[in-house]
Length: 188
Ligand code: SAH
Image 1 (cartoon, helix red, strand yellow):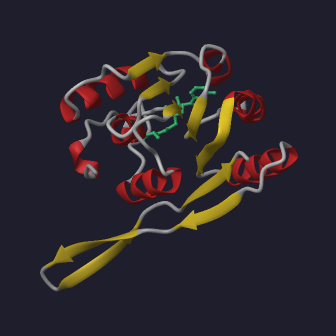
Image 2 (cartoon, rainbow, N blue to C red; image 1 turned 45 degrees about the vertical axis):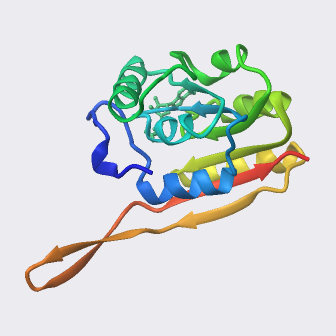
């Protein structure tokens, strides 16, 4: 696992997803070395970097060309190789048409396409495949749960509140990070 401060950041691209959330996603996805992973909305590359060395192949998708650029830079800085990473600079729906046999779908951004994205992922997800959505907007959380239920999944919903301790002269001050929800589902 990497620390948040290891990543190159840009004010034009969100991320990286914070360390505690990255760790939980790696753990909850149960990723293994023969898995095909999709990182939809790769942003700064926080998840691509953590998953690339743990899976067979990862598709890093983002509609923002700057996100693809910074994800590439972080892979170059933090990993030995990007040979199992395929970058797709386009919106999720278009990008998913080129991807099959998904074992793990990480959704970190959907920008109004969530329903179509989940329909496509459901079609292309292997048996035992996992969907993990990280969401900060209340609306996305509700939409994601309802859509997954409609598609026949039994989604789990976990809200994570992390505070980091900052060591000051007079003691330790706890600083809260934004709460994030992880919505997860498994295909049977
Ligand atoms: N998990 C990332 C941060 C994700 S931020 C990290 O660890 O760095 C969300 C990203 O989703 C943004 O870069 C945004 O451009 C992208 N995004 C939002 N909607 C999208 C869509 N419909 N298709 C592709 N990318 C999208």
